[in-house]
Length: 140
Image 1 (cartoon, rainbow, N blue to C red):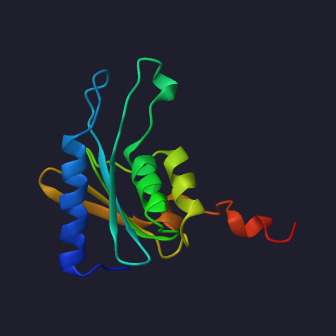
Image 2: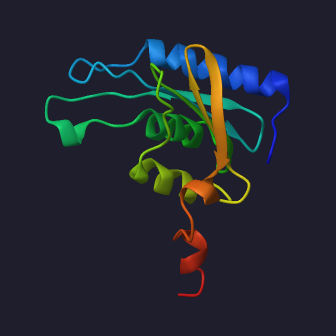
């Protein structure tokens, strides 16, 4: 399994926890934070933001990816997602596909955490096997 240096993992965890503290989740009360490590070693954070018209909200991972793109990042190396616990939280299906757009599935590390720390990790390929991505459109 891929491993991050402890200091990088701690930066991701701290950023995701700080983002989770800023979550706007008045309806579900389920605050989520995410932090994405880009190809330049920069960390970009995001939180979930709900809306009274439920489909109009967005996930922490999407917010973090947006911050990464706005800062010039184009390839996610790792993403840490943190929720309230005790259940392990993973990116939803839509966020898995969004992460696929900006990663190599076999090497993107997905890390799950809660307030007590890191709980589990996978590659995106493990969470989204046989995925469809930008490489499928190169031959058109």
